[in-house]
Image (cartoon, rainbow, N blue to C red; front, side):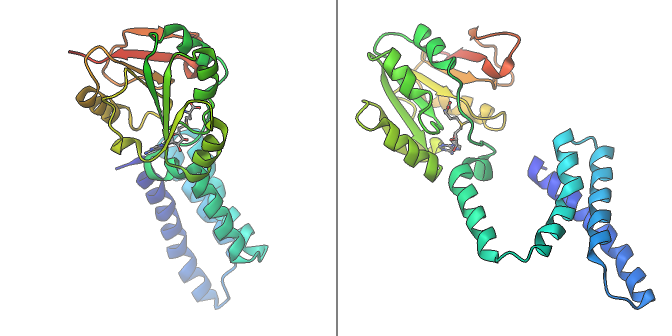
Length: 247
Ligand SMILES: C[S@@+](CC[C@H](N)C(=O)[O-])C[C@H]1O[C@@H](n2cnc3c(N)ncnc32)[C@H](O)[C@@H]1O
């Protein structure tokens, strides 16, 4: 069961439990449902279930607050168009989180100089899930000899990256990283999440040439030993895991 489904099931189980207790309670008292305590009880039950099943702490808080906040939001009587608008805006920015558990966050300023120091001259490098170009732009100014490309599939980050990289010699592509052939690149860089790493490594091994580099920031490939590491050992989020495609 995926992480999404597990959390959804916990919240649904808590709601079902509370509804099945609340229904006879309000029926026997012949009163209308009071939704505030029902929402609070669902939050409490979901929190207890999340704690008992040892979900990560941030999920426990989300479970505790979800139903009460839903109730509070409904009290505000905001036009449903606002919710639709907010959903659309979030989807346009965080499409990757919804479709593949890969949200948008940006490589820090330290990453470009680290890559600049280790990439071979004139290498072709692709940033898969390139965000708004915050890695490619500084890397391009520090290493003008490189041939840099980025691919992104969330509409607003793609647009921001396209505007920022225009005229800078960076090939900025719209598309799904899983459909993009990796063969032309001597280096593929990614800063994604733990979820896609094994499948991505298989794709890289199938498509990239032996000896090419696959570099992942923050997220190692389970079961693979990197050829080298770069960045501070005390800050795993800032580490680069450098793998070489086997022959
Ligand atoms: C953590 S951000 C990294 C951004 C940039 N590479 C950097 O280092 O600053 C990951 C990016 O991957 C994008 N992404 C997620 N799934 C994708 C997919 N299937 N195809 C293309 N891009 C994707 C997300 O929209 C997000 O912008």
